[in-house]
Structure formats: structure tokens, C-alpha cells
Length: 63
Image (cartoon, rainbow, N blue to C red; front, side, top):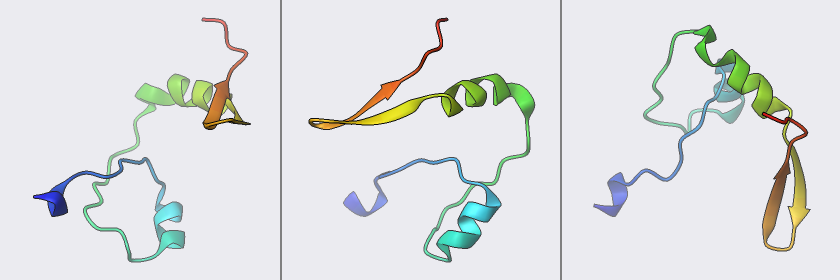
């Protein structure tokens, strides 16, 4: 059963997949949709800082 467990989920562009090579299996293509453009734009504004045990995410967005 451990062989079938999900270990990661990611949103990759075709260019990302091309750079990563053939090591990926179970890729599910999705059609372009502007539904999440606002969310993605906000996520792009997040800054990552090293922290003692991992990273800290910072955003100046006041929602």
C-alpha cells in the first residue's frame, strides 16, 4: 500500500515538466482557466525567509 501513497502535489507548467524530464508519472493536464488568477497573483507576492526550523512566509497583503 505504501507504493500508492501520494507524496506530493504540484502545479507545473509544460516548461517545468520539460526541464524535469521523464521522471514524472501520473501527470494530469488541466485547461487554462482564469478562475484562480487573483489567488496566484497574491501567492506570487509572498516572500520566503529562512527560519530556525524551516521557512517563514511573509506577505504585505492586508486582506
